[in-house]
Length: 145
View 1 (tube, helix red, strand yellow):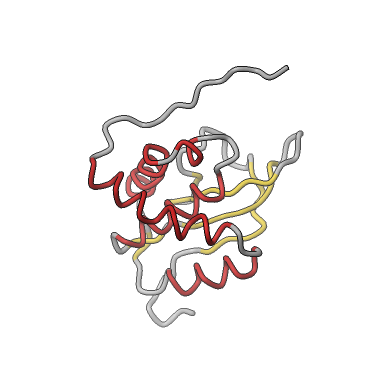
View 2 (spheres, one colour):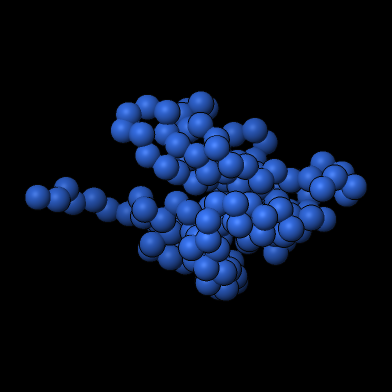
């Protein structure tokens, strides 16, 4: 027997933002099919030249992804949601910290999320709830690689 649940989709996301989210959804899903090492390589290239994203910018991108795609709003949509939010931030010239890791409390499951200003964005969990295994952070200076 399954437990019924309702997905909470953000409201008030402007049409242009939802369309941009739909645009980045295709490459986000394609990236999600790659092995973690390749994802990190691609994101490492894409982050170049971007300023660090603020929490508000990262939350706007995450909300747009959830508003544009039911899959991204769902519990199993964390990877395309986080990748899409990072790509959406990049379209605006910023970059959040993209993370993949595990939940540190049982049941141990894999998860992907974005962070800004040192904390997870839109996850609704306390700091330290996830353990990072892979992270692609914004470059602090243009000379960093």
